[in-house]
Length: 483
Image 1 (cartoon, rainbow, N blue to C red):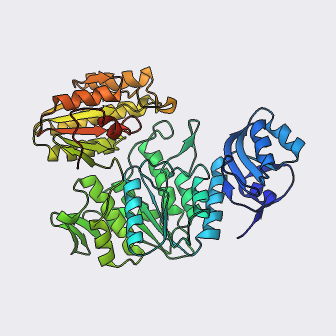
Image 2: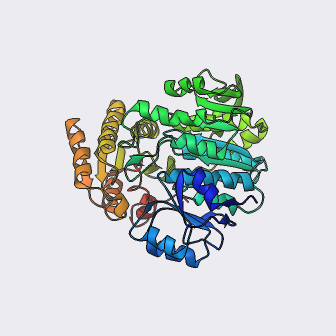
């Protein structure tokens, strides 16, 4: 395993080393889990944290925000403290170091874009597992490990059981800290993983405040294509149905080939199923998803697997047997039909409402969680998306709309503030849309289920505040879970 010194690390993260130059003999880690020789990355640290790190025998600590007497304590204890203006540089270095030491000869894919990253990444992971590779992924049902702005991924890679033979890594398209954009996050983290394949799902508005235009989002997402290493033969897997993603072909390096998925592309969907080079690969009835936006994710995953040289029969088997992540258009009940979806930004909301309406035989009861502590802009856009989605289906399906701030289940990081609630409800009023508002998730779900007939559909949409819905439903008498 390659060891680095604190002085070398400080240089690589554009930081200033306070204290002695030492060899880093362990891995990159959190302070809580750190062992002797480890390097700790932490956004903020005070003198107490320095004392704990020194007592554990930590090699060094990297931070962006030394508070109170952190620097003074580091000097007093002769403890190596590295202060950088961009903590993401430290995490990118940690990921690169972990890949080089523990997964250097592995197959590696990164996935980014506004929507569908988690599903696409997890499906690629499933295909690689089916192909027999010992595979690492940072995607889980709650998307807790995909930000790459703390050392969790480098730690997981270093501690992964057995030799890593393949990696499917989800990269946030936009990331920030304390309301400030971490510029070129997708490009920086893609370069750190150094994949042979980059997948781009789409480009729509999200993370309002960090980015304030679709052009800014495009610039951030396209950084992932630009980061493909020109020294090796690489692939960019691009969504042909998204005109902005199509433009990213112009950013490919001389050794990068492009494979498109979508209408009239290398991998495309028709009524019969998914085709590869005009030949039917997977029949429609064998697909794990039926809604259009998830079919996009399937095509993206298939395209990535093809570029990696995975046998088509293995791809077909893995996709046909795929079990989705939680809250990805999951069916929770049949009578009434209850659909749970993570839709948390405008594009995802409109697509999910449209897909749910196609399955609805009676009235569609939409229950939406307002996004807490995410700002007024994204909540205004989400409310507009709900209104637009319901207007699009209004000629075909009757509907009701219930809102919730989920005050009974969210923590302080996801609490809906008064301005967010006001902008959401005011937007719906301006659109002439009727709704009911509940402070608790349980009461919102109870209202929807009590109003729903057996042939109706209940659609649960939203992030954070709607995440615990499947557990809360078990407290409601009318809920009949799938057996």
